[in-house]
Length: 142
Image 1: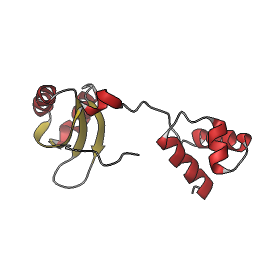
Image 2 (image 1 turned 90 degrees about the vertical axis):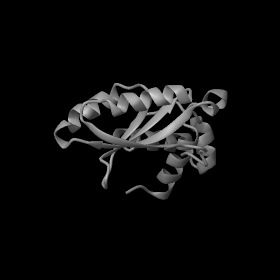
Image 3 (image 1 turned 30 degrees about the vertical axis):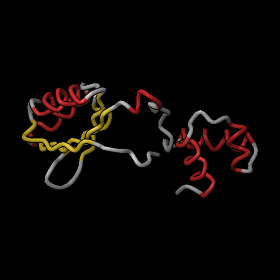
Image 4 (image 1 turned 135 degrees about the vertical axis):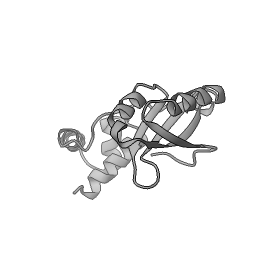
């Protein structure tokens, strides 16, 4: 269970993981050493697994994103997961309940590239069928 300050620290890191320890300490009204110790604790306990790059500006504005629901032949699930992991445009893969087994988040630089990736996913061994929804606008992302 995370305390209120740890939750606030995580929120600020999710907004900008490159924030300085000093800036975080000022925002949280605690000492720099407290922030350093909390971050170290969150990393050690596995709450913070790592830091990543969020694409922005012109590059991100021109990306096309789709959520692809994937129905998989159950005996081939592991093979299909491995194959999806090898497709660089698949940024995330979720196992879900319901009619479909997986949801892949696909990011491409054009509609043509997206179409090719969707065809590639549909042709993977183990994929029974897919259903895609293209993201029209991102309202917010944390």
